[in-house]
Length: 370
Image (cartoon, rainbow, N blue to C red):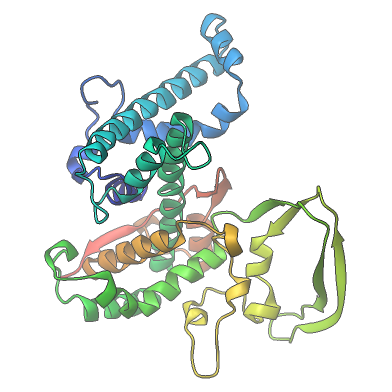
């Protein structure tokens, strides 16, 4: 999934179109010590170590050999240096094309074009990206543009295997949009015409994000004194109603750091019902008598500072899911088939906390449909 989503953001945002086979090569291009994908993956895996270790400490480790730390520092430094070199190649090519007027507004490299144009503008510092800001933005979009989607898709494929009745509904929907097993690239398919038809697939992915949000908690700085409304409630046992209690207010002074517990919000029975802990994609499909609670769903945060790439992430993820399910049946691994549903979930949906929540044992079996 990491390779798939990295290829998507590289092509759509930065105009880097390579085949899956070429991207899988371990042979770095001329002038590089790592391939583009290896440099990105290395940087993702070591970004926390990179942030927490000052430059002088890394220099010291190159002279004073410390078990584990020296090797980790060397690998991390090499990864970030190589990623910067690859990004500079992209920027150099884009600058030349911008200068020659070759990159159009409809280009695959629209994101890169906008960043490079902001870097090249002469309209004053307040509108201009410095070289450092340009590279930082590219790194952020590459990182956030593939890592979070890859992890969410990994959870999604496990859930497809665990809930075959849900998978069948997605297959029926996808087969109705694209008949047969022909790759989507060979079909006359457009976002405008076909994406809205994948309503259940979108509901399935949103339910995946509700149960496994990339960021379970988000910190926000408070710049002004404010008062937040709140309400008490008592959650009954499963099958019993949740009782809403009295309203009250919480004073939040400027200078505070407010932690938004997204996972708690996604499990709140006031918004999601007594079955909030259950996997139920149908809860994200509106009807004449029901509208799912938009403000209680925050996998991309909310408001003016919400994730700039949320529409992109939803679109690529839904398309990947629909197209894979259309051509493959997703199954539980053979060694877990005889286990109970609870044991299968416990084994396959384990995760740990990294930059985002990261699945640690997500694996499924693919069987081509005939």
